[in-house]
Length: 458
Image (cartoon, helix red, strand yellow):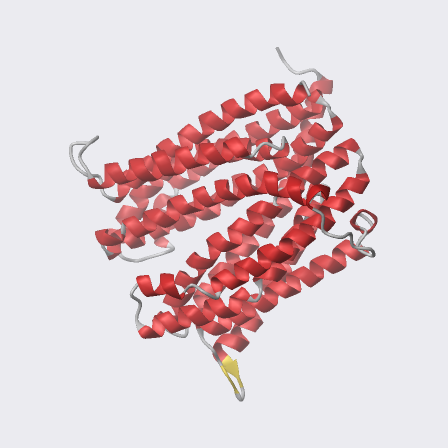
């Protein structure tokens, strides 16, 4: 049956609201990716050891950064729900308690990065790379308390349905990162450059500047100043918001870490297959990581829309947001599949001129083309579940799907003949990723269906 004009108008309006939220988040995420690329390129100009130190240091820092981010991300659905319920005092309360929680999260992250000598020793690095990596981690660690505080502010205004500040602050960070990198990596005048360690100094400064700019926005903006109430900061209280953030955020954080861990461990497991395999795999991962920013941004916007509708106790709005979000996720998945398959040769040519590497990377992007739709759907379902304040099952599903099927299954396919006539090598891991994402999409879809009935009957 065709849609009525009224129904079609509602769908268009919801689509517009969702895209209005998602597009700035997407640009912000791409700007943050560009920050990493800038660090890599500028440190690479100094030398191979500096480039290796940045790559290794970033790999060690990212899971630490993601844990605190995943916990604080709980602020978005919590605040969106309270906005829907029009319980504005709770919004202020959640922000204040989120800021208090960000302090120990940031400090613990800082101390952890400063004490990774044991892991670095296990990697048997050259003395030069060891020292450069250690110095990079030491200096960038000073920025982690700031970025945790910034994330609390960011997820506060995103929970209110405002995402443009995230975009502009990310652009600002990218803009100032380049001259700061140039100064601290290469030096200027009588000031000697620090190489990779200088990149850590620059990044720490950028993080603190992001926090201060975000704080100024929250205090000065008409959309946030009254709700933030930062002129009189509440005292930290476990039952006044921190408990809710932790209960929702910790499982969410582990779910994110399981996904990050999947790709990190694959990189370690294929090291024995040689430089060509490592390079081809890295090219494919690099492109798919950028492509993932599109459905991830949609999922973060969907969290806000679902959370608000949940708070309003409006089944019609909730289902409308969900339908539009899932349709967009499928469309994005199909689009990314076509790009991954149809332009795979052109994509990999940007990264390398080695023919063997290009052939392997192109073949791996074919696997990526097959899983893009499932990846988009599973991350959209996870975002919707987060909006419904349900993250514990998502944590279990991601563990089973990513590590049980994706990683373990991929290892079996890559190195044994238990399931195939002969080991598949690195392609076995990509088959594992495909089946893991398919399982995640199915299980999270079923969980979402169940939670809809639960929430609507509360």
